[in-house]
Image 1 (cartoon, rainbow over the protein chains, first blue to last red):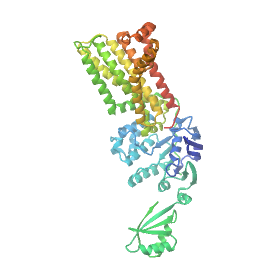
Image 2: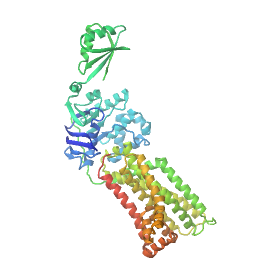
Image 3: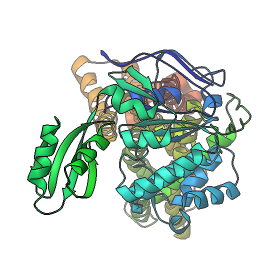
Image 4: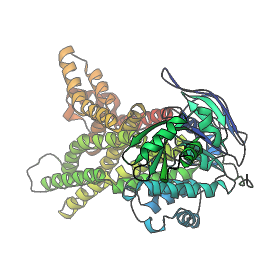
Length: 284
Length: 290
């Protein structure tokens, strides 16, 4: 359904996307994961025809370069930051977006309700929190009920609560059978939202895999922060180091470095040593 | 994987007037919300009223009828303020939207760059129409109430010419904004251009004429090449029918072009409307990075 072949994008002498190839089937959800500057956002901008590029992109068989309007009519785009149109009211911005897509006011009311913006429609965009702005972006993208959604770092500027809410909305959209393309540098978010991950670095695909395998494929390590009962930290350190873990004490417990899928092993080691774990967190 | 989402009908690539209208409406609404727009509109209206009051019957301004005196004063005001208004509005428009991400948001919709450009242009041209005709309208009404009656049609013609000047400068401003990345550099460039057109252009032509003994024909052509000067000449002929105030260059123009002078000057102003705007559209529509 979406076919990207030999996509290359250069800004001056810098090659931001380098011979990128990707095919996405209808109804599939795919994440482009990678650090800032990996080229994820540029691929999205190429799809939208916002930048010039070498290579070919087709959406549903339509050439994105020659028939940009037709391609964009199939896409809903949630930008990374909704930091523009600050003086506009929420409802006016959505009305404008709807007018550009020949959509009636009843659909505007519908998406306002879907994303939970009903109490904020008369606020100016500048008065919205990061989470509400993100919901507004999603609302605008959903107006045409598009079969494909492009989500550029959908939760990057959100606090934990707003992120949970946004992910809840996006999971719902995924289950409606839409094609989702998500760019992200949050590995947990990728795991929750997509069927397939394309890891990128310096404009190239480095790994393509199932989201549950990504951390392992990339050899990513995590720190497990274990909060322990009073006085048991030295015993825990001994047990972990004996089993070959790198561990160190901090103010509230111990920190132990684990592989992406080796968290359970560290916890089991402590249980065998009789150390009681009060709580734990994963730090990446 | 769940059932796939249905596909909507494919949109045509043909330009659609409804999209141009939607963007134009949004630009007008933005202008109405903008404090800069009200500042310009207010300054122009206040200065127009002051000039109209000072040119009323019984005041000491000599030379023309009441409307003529007011119009002459307004031409002087318009040739300074209106180019700055048009240039800055146009220059900030695309560059500011590009900088904020608004242009990216707009162009992520099924709208072509041509539709986005002409919608922006028409919206801003309408906002400038309101400013120019608001200023001239207030001054005209005030003059009429105070007893001025003659030359009302010339007054309207000058208002129309002023709007042409405004939209020609809007086109130049939009052209500037296709070259600049940020709103601030677009505004800076437009102010530099304004200084060049309004002050340096005039002084430059005069200085060159004195230093090089420029023939009057060349002096006239140099003056016409500057859109602000072309406007001034067209406006002067609109309410006086002559360019005597320009001395030999004016005499040359009258002698050479005769009755066709006002048409020729109007043509130059219209060219200044069409050429920069078309260039700006061509640069924007051919699809650089947003």
